[in-house]
Each structure stands twice: as C-alpha cells, then as structure tokens.
Image (cartoon, rainbow, N blue to C red):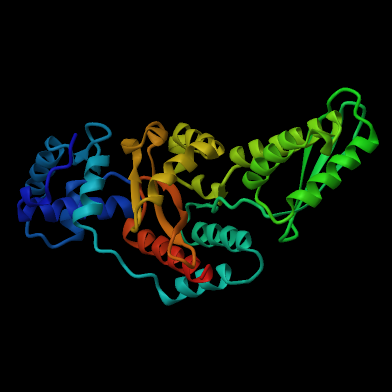
Length: 347
C-alpha cells in the first residue's frame, strides 16, 4: 500500500497516530486507547480515541495483532511517521564524545571503521554496520611457498605493510625454482601497481616476450594474479558488530524473526548490495521492513548514511540494523553524525 500524504489526516487523527507510534516505539507493546487517554491530554474519551484508531487501521497505518490487543504501526505507518511527523533529536554531547573518541583512536582506517560499528552498536542497542571502501592494494612483493606437491601459499605484501595469504593449486611439474622465478618476476615488474593494473601489464608483457619466463613459471604468474583478483572481487566489504544486541528481552516472543535476521546478517554480500543503494545519495536512508526484499521475513529496519573521502567522493556507508521498533528520532541523527565523523577522519 502506498503511503498516504500526512495532509490527508485531520488534526485529531495526526495526534492520535503520533502518540500511538511514539508509545509503541518506546515500549514495543501494542497501544490501547485507554493508555493514550490516560497518559496524554487530548481531551478525548477512550471511545473517541478507539474510533480514531479504527479509522487509522482502515487506512493501513495501524494494525492490531489480535482482537483484544491495542494497535501498533504498520510498516506503511512507520514510513509516514519517519518521513512526515518525526522530530529528530540531535545526538547528546556524551554520544558525540563517545563516537568521536572511539572512531578517532588512530591506526589504519579499517580500525576506525570497525570502531564506528562498535560505537553505533553500543549507543543504539542495534547491530552496527559499515561498508568498507573498495580499495585495491598497491603491490610491493609476491612470494610462493610450497605446501605440498600440488599446492602453494601465495603471499602478497602491499605497500602499506599488510600481508595476505591464499592457497594456490599448482600446475603439474612445478619446481621450487619455478616458484622463485615467478615470485621474483612479479615482485620486480608489478611493484607499485594495483592488481587490475598488474593484470593488464602482465598480459601485454607475456604476450610480447614469451622468453621472459618458462611455461611453468608463466602459468604460476597467471594463476597467482587470477586468485588475488577473483578473491578481491568476492571479499566481504561489510563489517558487522553487535549482533547480540538483537537478542533482547522481547526477542523470546519473536524468535523466528530474530533467527531470520541473524541469518541475513551472515549473508554480508546481500546486505552490501542493499547498502550500495545508499552510496548514490548524499543523505541518510531508512529501509523499513519489507520495503526491501532482504528483510521482508525478519521485519527489520536499516538506517544508513554515506561517508566521504577527502576529495568529496562517497566511498562507504555506515549505519545500524535492528527491528522496525527503533527509536528513529534518536538513531537517525546518531548515524548521520558517525558518517560525518568518518568523513572528517578521511580528509
């Protein structure tokens, strides 16, 4: 159902709807008409409030889990509230200090990104997520270490000092001298390049000069570059922290939803594809429940904000994943502030 414009609700309906949503987001419990009448001064009787809530249910903005229960907002209602009624609260000074202190502790940018997820997870009681910039390593040195007659460890050392290892299947008949020859050739010819640049250069050089390497060493070089390039394309680019926050006191009543959400968090590539849609924007994005197929079963929400490199390019996304019952007014500005802090760090 498409979200109705907020202007189509009269003042009484807007007031009741807002109070139902705010109470539900605060407690996680469906809200009864007597609760609204007792807690708030609307000058309306419980019967009048109940009639308004019934009208809102017919509009698809509220729902009742069963006949005797109160009402809770639907995903359509949550979208209307977030887009048209919510008054966001700026992060408190304590929240700002916590985010800045954890993100700015120093070290590689990956440490700051991981710290950002921990900060958001702790402050929001959700799972913190961050999409890491897709950076190709600048190559410095290659080596191959034989593990047995059929496999070797391919070792890549980048200019920033990072070291990564991959197990490589060896061509038949490869000798230790072939391993050394291939490693020396790659280290001498490819230092200072990215993997993508190295693929192009190797293709041109080996085609032009077949004598540069013997056939066994040449196949080693091809396989070495191929395994690094393929692995780099498939490597998870998402850091997730604080999954335990999703199993709270209310989870026991909805274990299937929580289990489904945890399964979805394990599929990092799927969530990465969802977050990539936030890369194109300049503002925080909110995905509520089944608005995205990935969370149609678990009924979860994602709040994500892009962060930028020093040249102004959007290079990643930071945010949180949690149940649709989030304190959107508090968490959205918190995510936005974290994205701004990361952007300042990367200048």
